Image (cartoon, rainbow, N blue to C red):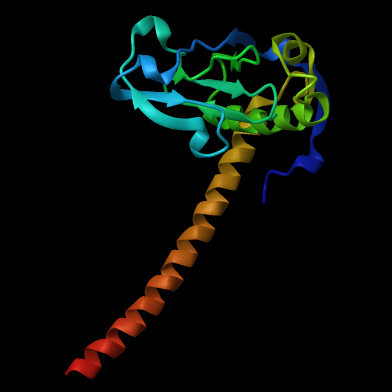
Amino acid sequence: MKYNLWDRKWEVFMIKDIFEIKKVKWRPIENYNNWLCPYISTSSNNNWLIWFVKWEKSEISEWNCISVDPIKWISFYHKYDFIWRGFSWASINLLYNKELNQYSYLFLCKAIEITAKYKASYWNLFNSYRLSNAKILLPADDLWNPDYKFMEDFIKEREKSKREKYRKYVESVIKTLDKNWDFRERERS
């Protein structure tokens, strides 16, 4: 692979220097009708998606952000507008940076989770204050700024590799199915 993590310079950055941190907007699901807007909760499945609801513009959390769970240390990238289930004082934080794309956001999700793993717990929530003051280790460019281009290229390369691996697997399964299908066809004739 062309991009690897070991041949990069790394630097410590404060999360508040990279992101604008916002609180999530929320309402209980009972207050909504079924519709089209993703309704998100703190589930480790399906990028936290649990339902689709009808919304009002003022209730929507805008797309292109990372959500960070203060207890479970999980973060997800959201490339769509959504409404949050919410309701507790341990509310989810949203991280925004308009200069980033989905690939650099995905890289940053993992860096945030690694940081949160050692900083957060049920008794020591990764709330907005702790989150904004948390430090994350990231690849740096020649000017010692976060190297977002490297992060993007790294994730793209990994995705391409996974897609290729999956394509080869599917092709092998199809060949196996084709052989079995031919065999059954010959038996019928």
